[in-house]
Every structure is written in structure tokens, then in C-alpha cells.
Image (tube, rainbow, N blue to C red):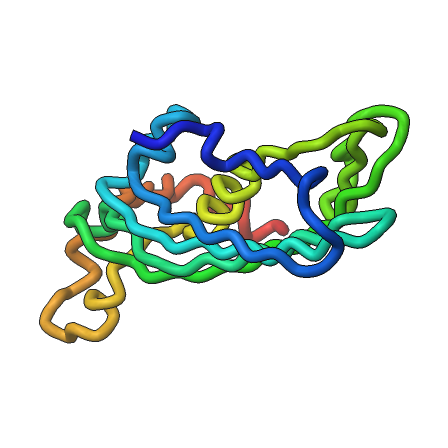
Length: 166
């Protein structure tokens, strides 16, 4: 089982220039964040860290699949996704991540843990409505069978006369 410390980057020991980091993400990674909406998953996440004298540029990219239940049929299916995330780390008086594109670390900081950024990048790449793509392709499945039955309200005929006044 991986530890979150495996995602810690000691940038103070790195020379200026580009550095590449590769991470394999599986279901155990999400257990650290108490996130259990996935049945299974496998992602490759790549980081290109570009260290400069006054800032550090982070460029993440990830691709893989996640197994989850379809919102319509409740059957498991694999969903392939990919995502990218970029931000800059600068140094200031205190930690500040109010801006999504610029993160300030206190002067003297020597490391950063990128696990939270990988977690957010993958979770945000999953659509809110999780529909198996095969449902759209397969014409034998009648989606009407899966729609909720809303009870139709029969209008009282007395109200029809009042509606005519409008």
C-alpha cells in the first residue's frame, strides 16, 4: 500500500530546469481521502515540474479508467478519462491557495505534497451524470423503462374555469 509521503516532492534539492515524475494511481490511493465511489480504477499521472529561480511550474496530466455504476441501469462500467492541471508555486510570507493557478508557500519551504492535486484532478474528470456509453449505442434498450414514473396530477375541472380568466 502506498503512503501519501510517496507523493511528496523535495524541490529544494532539484536543479533549475524540468523534472518528470510518474505516479500510478489505484483504488488504495483514494482510501486516504475516504472516497469510495469507485469500484475500481487505474490511472497514470505524469508531472512535469519546471523549477525556476523564483517560482516552480507544475503541469499534471493523467489518463486511465474508472469502474463505477451507471446512473440509469446501476450496472458497473469502465469510463476512460483524461485530465490536465497546471499551477505555479511562488514563495511568500504564508501559505495561500486562494487562487487556483498560483499557490504561495512560505519562504524556506522545501517540499510539497502533490497527492491532493492528483486526487482533485481525477475526481473532477468524472462526469456528474454517469451513463454507460453502451446504452446510447445499443438501440435495444428502451430508456423509457428506466425513467422515474412521475405521477400525473389530474386537474380539477373547477380550476379550468379560473384558468380561462388569466
